[in-house]
Amino acid sequence: MTESVVVTGYGVFNVFGFGADALRHGVFGGRSGFGPLTRFDTTGFRGRIAAAHPPDLQACELRQYPVLRRCAEAALEMAGLRTAPGAPVLIGTQGDHTVLSNWWRSKTSGAVPGRALPGLAAELPYRLGEELGLGKPRLAFQNACVASSDAVLHGCRLIEQGHADVVVCGGVYLVEQEFFAKFDSGRACARDGRVRPFDRSRSGLLLGDGAGVAVLESARHARARGAEPLVAVAGWALAGDAYHVVRPHPEGAGLAAAIRGALARARLEPAAIEYVNAHGTGTPANDPAETAALRRALGGHADAVPVSSTKGATGHMLEATGIVELIITTLALRDGQLPPTVGLTSPDPRCDLDYVPVRARPARLRRALTTNAGFGGLNSAIVLEAYDGD
Image 1 (cartoon, helix red, strand yellow):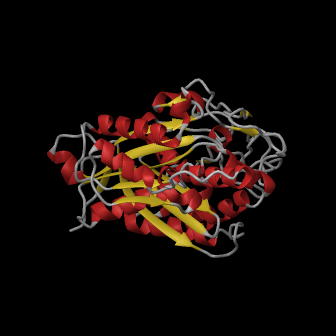
Image 2 (cartoon, rainbow, N blue to C red):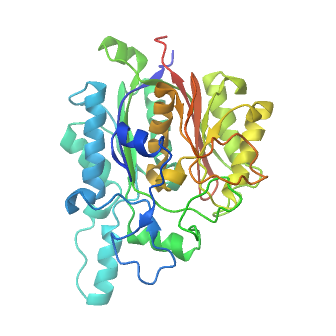
Image 3 (cartoon, rainbow, N blue to C red):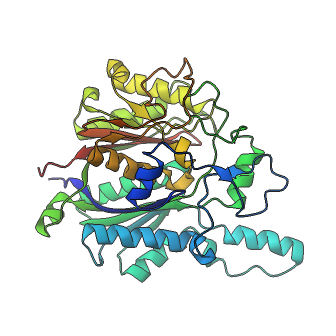
């Protein structure tokens, strides 16, 4: 018999700050988090805008690990766990780029690079496990925009198969010079300093700060200790289409396969989905491809289900995107509010679904879908369900 999976706690950070109330104020409030980037020198870049948290935190706290740890502590506290000694730690991250920074510095100054460990992706789950008394394995997931979604999916597998009762999973990305330069030089960033998902005037993505940690548990384990689950993870799936190095399949083949796989695992028909939190990057290629994927996977129900992208508020949080958007979707289920697609004022005719423009919308929800996609044909889909104790 397989174990059902529930979420019992979370901690979250983005441009609007820490915690659920920051998401309610910013994302559900329809606010845009973009502004001039002052974290590093942007001289020479085409773009200088990001959804970066204002520098009112101490400098040491605007590094990835302190932010991630604060989210993990909040997640464990919400779950009612002082610690979880046997819990695997699964984190989506590329590391804090210290290794790269030191290497470039050594090339120009002749200095010997510092110790490698602090900059490696594997350091974050390792250190989190050591300092919070968590278990093993401690894994870093580095597959781009589905990294933290993949961490969640792997955690669900471990619980479903009886290998763990509790899993601590999440992801983190803070806007930094290395990836900012890559997206800027690749001309992927919005020219007007706004992310406009599904809008005819959209011109690209913008990066944003993000971190999130969720505590996953088997429903049996949560019941046994008297914990109240927030939502159930009813279904999940990954799929690849290998269509192009960076472009999505124009008909959304891989993402549609992931959605169908998640529905099949949840034993649900498309009509059971009442809201979709879309990947929605605001790039010319992604948004019509995602629209096509939803039509392929949901059939005629696609016209009836509300869909929104929250990246018009938060920016693209790369490895943290999946977990932060899962937490946003959890809030939508629990609060009865659909987050709006900020920046959508003039819909693209090719993006012809109900994209909840500009303002949040009240809705009583039982089941929601959250999707993510990444370079190289990576696609993930997760079905969340209001928990009824079964």
